[in-house]
Image (cartoon, rainbow, N blue to C red):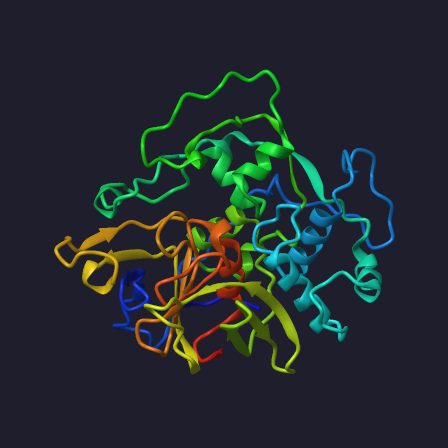
Length: 381
């Protein structure tokens, strides 16, 4: 499926959900200059075919059965949020999505039938070892200030450290990467400034070999994307340009999930999502996709936040994966509402939002390639 870029200005305004694109022109679509084919991704997965044995050196250094299952489900589009080797809510949701798509009893648990269905991918290890390329490690990196007025002074809300960038590339957290790669004998790190996240600390370096979650379905094809910056974002997040087309999206408030169905009504993807709060409830009903902003800028309007003083100044926030809506905004026909990414993937399914539907950056990057203007979106209780 060729990815087209809607004519949607990449400036979002904070509204009831605290984010919404400037919809001054969403009537048509345009093609930007097609990017040149990039060099092969050194991080891309190299998998054995179903039933083939692993090549020497590809096996895990120790069994990680939950992480292995998460890796497989993530590759199939039923993502567990962050891959952490823990069987939490997001993993149970991913299992339930796989079961529904394969006409199994939907329990959210690993039963005999589900185990048998997953055996096709039993030769996919939970982790693999990669070498950090110098260009990937080059940055720029900068701590994300907690205050919007300080964020507005930055050229971009980029990754805070190489560690955080690696974590997003392999759909996990900085803590998991550090657990997979212990550094015995390392000196205690100095304290960070007040308000600066631990994710801003870099412990990895260019040329280092590290063990990472074995995420796959991560190859990009420049011929499918007409926006060089977006192609770079997909590569940075380990998200393939080859995604199914979604005809209908269903967001369930009670289950905390977003499902994507194709034209035949088959479930092709399911993600755990954060949606709404008691102050900004999810607007139940049937809506549609109006347009899409990739790598968007934002206008921060304090008057539209119930928990921020109206005396604060309106600000323009730069783009970046650590921006308030992450790497993409999917604009909906319900005014001021959309589906977007997040700078804090570990909070998905565990925290409230200001009304909109929030996904990890890698999941919203997938979804942004699956929908188009007119795609139906149902918000249900």
